[in-house]
Length: 290
Image (cartoon, rainbow, N blue to C red; front, side, top):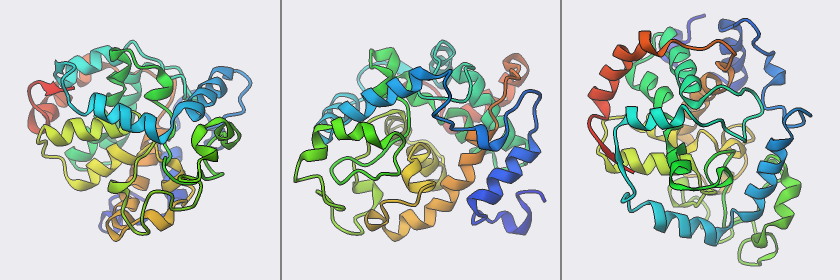
């Protein structure tokens, strides 16, 4: 069944989307669905070390510090393509699935979306969703840029990847932060919740303050695609408002393309460049403030 059947209904279950995309993109050498996000892979010890550092240092105060530092957008001006050129040098230490460059992963994601005939804004979202990883260009360690995100300022869920490492986070024993709501109010909405700092939140603010024409579902995909404890594990429900619940199906719709389009096959940028350049010119033209 084509995913745009049934009125392009984003309410298809996550399992249905995962099965659909995994079956539709059987690339040579591509892994089975159950093998993705396998954090016990003995060949990726660096992933475990990444999350040990991430969970130790991503505190509520640390997030506030990084927001003050980077949401002034005074570090550099770059076009989308200039940012992509940098990403071509980066391999994500938090990713247990594949060692392709970020640019190649972005193209795999967007081309899978494009192949299913989705709107051009959805394709562009797939193409740019990890651009916030240019934080590494500004000297940030990967544990403060990539990986799954989770709320700070309230009790940590045991459904966060490697939850045992969160015992070393100073917030774990802080009475301000160890209740289910912590510093937040019930139903306050994710826009009022501080997540662990990283590329999702950063890129969301970069494109928002640039006045881009991407619709609200695209902005949610960018901002929350790494928030697996919410969109996959269904945690933190007490913090959600009705807008979050309305947007959740769109984040879930995006996730299988992000995850299951990964394969060793390398996209040909020279062939694809004219199409993506036209999308960038339509939605995010010129230099952006980073």
